[in-house]
Each structure stands twice: as structure tokens, then as C-alpha cells.
Image (cartoon, rainbow, N blue to C red; front, top):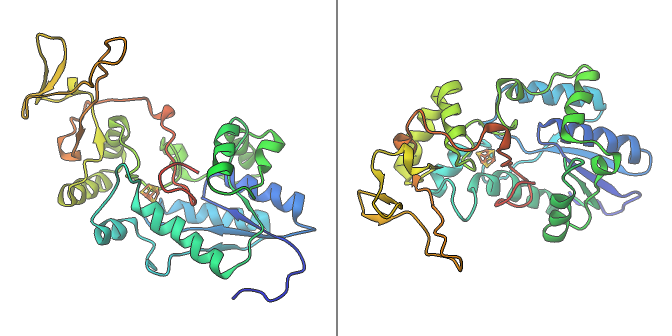
Length: 292
Ligand code: SF4
């Protein structure tokens, strides 16, 4: 219910079950807690690791603030799998519908019912340009609390350990973030073969659902694919369709290789792409096509 009078400004801290947004919530409370109403908000997604809930409760106790749940009324189960099934779409150039429905739409519904003056997200030191892009494209009224404090993501992780809060176990297990396991925003073969190794049931479920829906979730260098070969012109081809996998020549005559998108059931177990530490896709609450 929208309040009919307001005595102080309201700051919404969007807590994503990551170390950065947890520390951002604490800094916001310390800096603005006496003069503003600080509300810490979370969009649950059931495909995230169960330990995220433990982490959220630990952070809640540390903050001494309730962490409120924000859901899309159309998806009360908060299931990304359900979104993909109902939408018949998993991921592509138009983004991922799960972020759109479970985070962006949930946030928009929340903002219809609640007056929010300022937003805080986990933009950390070192992410200044991402923060500026976000301000320009999404919300001017965003406070860069971690950037102003000079705290990087690694600093946040360390800080939580120092105050005795174990980060979500996804980090310890080697996942690039604490978002869903088997995130459809990832297209790296490195990531999907990691999922196959450490969360086989998730890999099997994504494999089955994506084939049925027609979503080619990964992009793989043709050297790993039996149906591709390098021809005499030194270019890679898809031998099934006889199509060249290179772009048209640019002004310098260079033809860029465009690795084909493939289904997960076509992904060789030895295929690799960029190392896991270089994968920086994230699931944001504002823009469903970019991290945030
Ligand atoms: S983490 Fe990935 S799979 Fe989960 S809601 Fe976000 S985009 Fe979708």
C-alpha cells in the first residue's frame, strides 16, 4: 500500500545473495540509517543454491534489518524453469525471460506499490563504468556506496569472512556467482562442462528442457565439433549445412570466426572456452539483457 505521507526518504537495497550487495546493505545502513528508511529487498529464485537462504538469514541477523521478499505476482513459485516453460523461451539476443519475469517485473510491481527514492546495488570499486552505464540507462537515483567506500568485490568477500559470515557455498564450489546453477545467460562451454561435472542433475534438466524448447544455450569453437572442419581456404565450415563459419571480410580483409551455437546435448565434454574466472555474466534486477 502506497503511504499517504512520508517523513523521510526511502532507500531500496537490492540484495542478490552475493557478498557485494550484503556489504552494500551494511554500508547503506551505517551511512543513511539515521536519516532514511533503509529497506533490504531480495528476489528469490528457487534454482539458486539452497545455501543462499542460509546466507541471507546470516546477513539479516548481521544487519539487524529484515530482508523482504519481492516476487512477481504471476510467478509465485519464483521458478526460472517455470518461466522458460510458460514462455517457451530460455535465452537469446532478447535476453533471459527469467531475469525479466522474476527480477525486473517483480521490481516494477514493487515500485508501483512502494515509494522508493534511492536504489543501492552491489556495484563495487573497479566497476565504475558499469555503474555509470547503469545510471544512464536505468536509474539516475542510484547510490554507489561500495565505490565511494573503495571496496572491491574481493574486499566485500574478505569483509564478510572477517565478521564471521560464510559466503554462499557456490563461491567455494567454484561457480562464477551465487545466482542460479545452470544459468541460461551463460554460453561458455567451460561453464556448461563445469555444470555437467559438479551439478549433473541440473545439466541433465537444462539439456532436456532446452532441446525441447529449441534453445541452443552454448557457443563452441568448431575445433571441438565433429560436424565442423577447416577447409582448404583455411576457413571453418559446418559440414552439415556447408555454411562458412566466418564473417564477411572487414576493411582489412579479416574474416572473424563466429563459433556456432549448439544444444547442450551436442557439447563435447572436453570443449573449453574462456576460463571460469573471466566469466562475468550476472543476473540483474533492472536490465534483463545485461548484468546489474
Ligand atoms: S541467474 Fe540466470 S537462470 Fe537464474 S534467473 Fe538469472 S538469468 Fe535466469
